[in-house]
Length: 392
Picture (cartoon, helix red, strand yellow):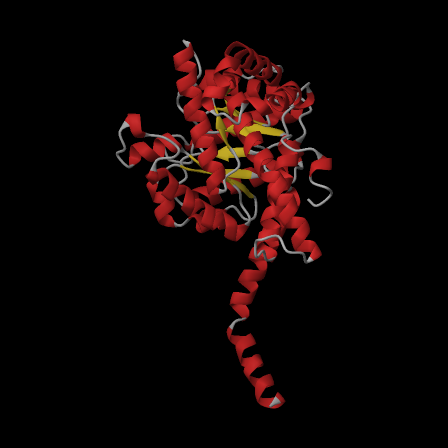
């Protein structure tokens, strides 16, 4: 039996060598992503000309003011939310902006070249100061204009100006990343990465992570894995662009939302590619801002809470925030979900590792998911170390 079996295995090994190499590479990418730890719960977008050294503190102050003014509405947003507000306040006092993007694209618009030159350089220096200041984000960087023909030159020029100003101001390149919007084809990603490599070589930098923003139907049709592969190992995120994508599909403005069925289909495609290659997915934002009357704020907060909960149900733990007043509700929902789920997760994880009965038939994949859930809770401040009993 041994000789025929050895021959069969050798033949199978030869036939599957290429597949084995691909799967091993995928596993290496997933392992590297796991080693980086949980993603921050949100990315805050600020027009580049409005970013300053005190942006993080200003967002924290504004978020706390909104929470203080409208705290009576929180229970109407979700009955589980008031209990976590002390934790939310603690995070807003220490790290209100987990990740910051100085927006040079849609949130900034099209201005004269001289104006954008100045604003890109200003934003680079300001972001360096934000990262070195109080209540600093985990990381930050710009969203530049796309690699489409009409905006390619402007986007690359602004990225170069931003990067030079950031480095000249003493910015930490290890906490920098750049978002490339309106990606439709892998060639656009490859061309942008080549430009990044040229800039990095001139300044002696390691590769800067690139986030790919998917907001065109062609990107989904093309195949998201090809976009990731075109980044040459530096793709650090897949960001869903809610409104460009919805508009391209002909969805009416009052139905353009992050939990629309068309949006969830697109994000499912992103998740499949991201899960295979170790790239996290980031949800879009709510277009409703918590400003105006109490009823206006309540409507905006309910919309925010709904899309954040739905994203968590789908396995997407990160999204965009466009206004500081929406940050408290995002944090409240994230904290409430993790606090509600943590006791059972700890119980199941402990039982699995001890080989004890827990009433659930768990397996290695579930163990990894339980650990990831608890680590996300710890990272965002929803859980304390003693609550996870050293299991995560």
